[in-house]
Length: 481
DNA sequence: ATGCATGAGGA
DNA sequence: CCTCATGCATT
Image (cartoon, rainbow, N blue to C red; front, side, top):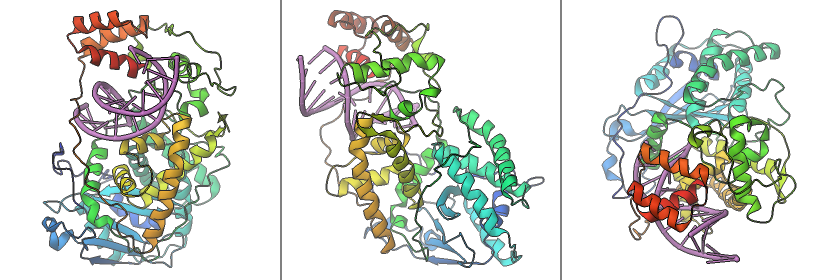
């Protein structure tokens, strides 16, 4: 289904293929492609390829033909904990596009990463020489499984996971012989250290290693790929590529939004300290006080005055570190909604989605093709991040649960058409998104801090002063609140 | 991933 | 007009 809504587009073609997990290539540290095989315990595998069957029936122009054929790396099943290695090649004008590589790690985790063609071929050429049987493979896999889960448990974004994984690979390569659990911990620390900088660079603080490793690392992901065949994603790869690119370029500047209290916030009151306090209070206010329902559990129960005091000079700079989502087990229950349960599901869902090699966009499209309510990429993104109110989450959850079950079924049956694109009607044109200038934002924020609910007259004059549509200004306040 | 837009439902 | 839930469009 190639698709891409006609008008769409901003998408510059495969502009930046690489990004990927290529790291130190030569010299000191081994490159990813050098250690990947051992990391995964792959010593015997076969490279197969099959022409991509146009699952969607069309897409003649994918003629990346010769090489664009979907390739599969089939891992030797003899190595426990590892199953089929799949490589979905994304069609593109040139064969240099990066490929999404999904690899099961351990028995219940799965990592996805992008590898460019040279890395792929490097990986491919390795099978000829790699023959050393390391009895400790399973051990390695296990270690990585744990680490992977920790990464996932911390709610990191795809980009973060990729970089973290990358560091993980290096860490493992360096400590290649350690397999004891104790050593495992050590590795975790190494990984943490290695990752920290990367993560920080990306703007998020997060405790990567929860040494106490918490009880529930039960990310029960059942494995169903026995022969790595699956596809259907082959045809959708355009979207895949698109998303991949975006993720690659992903800049997480962490601006954060102050919509209502999100599950992430509710379940982690601890992270909401200092600067965050104000926002949190506001969040509680807007969503609970006003809705009269409010329930005991919310940590800050008391309602804050409508006019957020906000002691800071500039509200915008106060909203930072909101997306810190680390592990926690607080089984909070708000409004009869088990946040913990939702959190668990969101985690599982993300893992499943990735293991199926699907992007949020694809899931959204698939959803819209099925019965019942559907949700957009945005919604899915927010759900996975738990950047939504408990109420919304509870509403979306069953939909995703249902879809996930069906997706698994289809996957097992050959994985055909996991996503079906349904031509959306153009609908009426949406107003072009307004982009406020930094200056305007300064003014707006200044006003917002003084008064979150400006009167009609105030809005008008403000709009006037800034030379923006009154409606635009009004909406800005609504969204800001 | 997230900023702004839209529309429903409620005062 | 507001709040909320969502989505489109853009970063």
